[in-house]
Image (cartoon, rainbow, N blue to C red; front, side, top):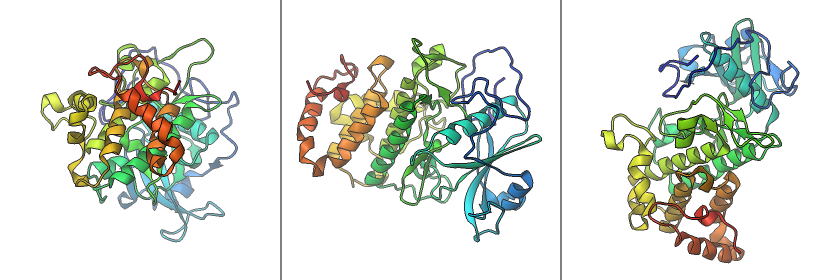
Length: 383
């Protein structure tokens, strides 16, 4: 069963036979990182619906932070020690996600969030505090991340300053890469499947925290090379081979990361129907600029007003190009992406990085206009 357009910005669906859903209790069927037991992770707190309703002042419109395919997200307050509801401004702020009551897919996504964020913990993943599963009510309680999403800052949504300086954008990219690399390298790897600007939240210091794990899947095991699943994602982000076949690998997340890098470079949305038809899909429109160094600087968001390092922009554009390679096998791993982003941030102050930077420059020269090389460009180790 597919969500309708009002529940999700855009997604792909493949026909599947209907499956029964567990209406109240926890069930592990097809969930990422789910234990065999029906119990939720023990570190999560179980909240009553009455308490969460009180914490949000009965889910008043003025408490609404946002909404999406899962449902609506409200700001609430709880006592930091007792976890009971508190008056606004007098307790710990939290974000409370309330599931739409209609549709089985929402329950599946709710379960995925509980078990991914209940078992995996990292500074660049949003922290899940607890949940509510009473009758038909499904809610999740997260830490409150005060600066909202990267999408809000890049695309002028809400009362956010859209002029993110280049250094801040680079910091956000590194943080998001750390979170994604952690998922891919977990003891039981997780494929995010919905990496996009709206799912990257920013704390007061602009540290990135990945959120919304409803579409996450376990990575392939044993001799399997991919997970076969119905195709879901947001238009403009999903990798072409995933859209075409439904074969999901971590390389889909790598492609999505490349799209977000391109959004941060340009300040433009991955998909925008208000643009001319040939410019609506950002990757198709701007990818040629990534391949041609003489045109790379034309990509840069004009709101940055020239306050950036040309070398850093060219390197980030090059990383994006590698992530967006048409051949999934030639895309780098998330660990390689992270290493090169961190190298870019620290190379000025670290003499030991000189040889690696020189090797990166040598590899850059191997790339043809089609963006293909025998290896994914600068993501190889020196011989």
